[in-house]
Structures are given as C-alpha cells and as structure tokens.
Length: 165
Image 1 (cartoon, rainbow, N blue to C red):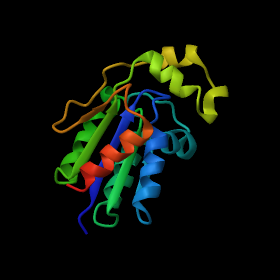
Image 2 (cartoon, rainbow, N blue to C red):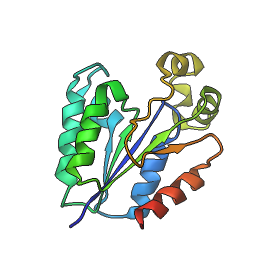
Image 3 (cartoon, rainbow, N blue to C red):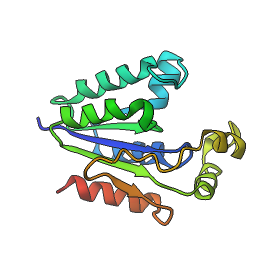
Image 4 (cartoon, rainbow, N blue to C red):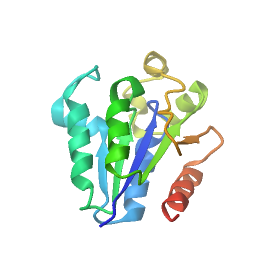
C-alpha cells in the first residue's frame, strides 16, 4: 500500500486539531491520526522541551503507519526548533509522498478561533501570547501556508484536493 503523510502544524488555537479530526473522518477507516498533544501530554506526560520523549514516539508511530495505512496525519504545534528534524526525516521516510500544512495566522485570528472551541475555558489570551511562535513554517518544498481568510471548510477542501493529485 502506498501511504501518504499529512503534517498539520501551527500555533495553539489555530484549528489544527479540528482539521486533522475532520480529515480523518472524511478519509475513513484505517487513517492514522498522530496528535502531538495526545502523545506528549496524555501518553507520556512530558513537557514540550528539546529532546522530550514525544519526538521519538511520534516518529515511531508515524513510521508504523507507512505501508499499513493509506493516510497518516501528524498534527500539533510541532515547533520547528524541536520537531523539525524529525518531521523532515518523516517526509524522506515517506518517499516525498508528504503534504505539509502550516497555519500562518495572525495572533488576533488565533485568539478569535481559540474562543470558538471547547478548550476556551482551559486557558486564555495571556497563555496564547506566552506560547506564540509566529512564522514557524518548516520551509520544505510544497509546504502550504494556511491564512486568516481561509475557513475550516476551505482548508479541508484544499487538503482533500491536493491528496487527489
């Protein structure tokens, strides 16, 4: 089976998880979703620091999906300084059959989107500002930057369209 890797990254509150789950639901059974938050916080309970255990486990889970799942989605903030080398390795591992997306949103748009989701009560604008890391794209060939003017439907349609090519 030829597998395709989909990487969805961006700041907290940008819409990554919503898109990744919608994409998984649309692509159907056997689509492997690897959410950074689940691996790092729920499975391992580690802080997002250089060299944390989640980097290696995300890589291993994503590699497991190659040849077993038609689509493997890796989703999270996935800061380039900590996760970039691992993500670039995965792109190579998937023989360049990778689709990379980065939510390149303004801070104001990110805050606005954050307040539409369930986690809005867990943390607010001050936390988002403390975590804010703008312009953190991977800089790999074919990376698609997702912008303020794109709705969730626009993003989902764009990704599905690119997967068909």
